[in-house]
Image (cartoon, rainbow, N blue to C red; front, side):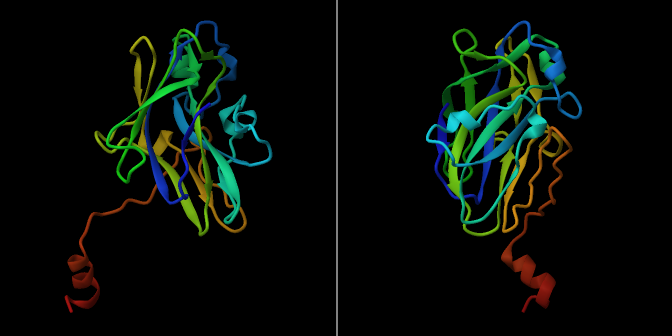
Length: 212
């Protein structure tokens, strides 16, 4: 288990995830909505000294995606492998190293997470990539996004079998607000996001005030 970074909740997380071959995985445990791999977040209150004790899930559908403001949490990054990878006889593994590009966790940065396929394989559907120790002091969203340098999110096996992930269908988010509103778990349903049109302050003023 590795701590990825300690930052506020106003962030997006850009990742590649490389899974590891693990023959003999039970296909019955796969539980993503469409059988495709997913990257999701799991929000856990800080109740034990060892955060890894709260990281593992038997089913990715059970991930908690919401939290309160002004409360510290461990937020785990999970890779759910789904049927498409499990049918190839592949599973997850423990984190070995990250490869940042650009500098992680700077704004606009992303990272590649690679597991050791030989020495530290995890069995089961859900692989744990690491965790954030964080507190949201205002309503905020923590979201998985494609890696900014190439706008790609993927899960790849050690045998070089790659699955490109959809921003809208396969990447999750967590919400933090008073009342603990849930975010989105892509193992259960697609995580649609509101489209954002690139613009400038001059264009905004022109549309709202006629340019004045």
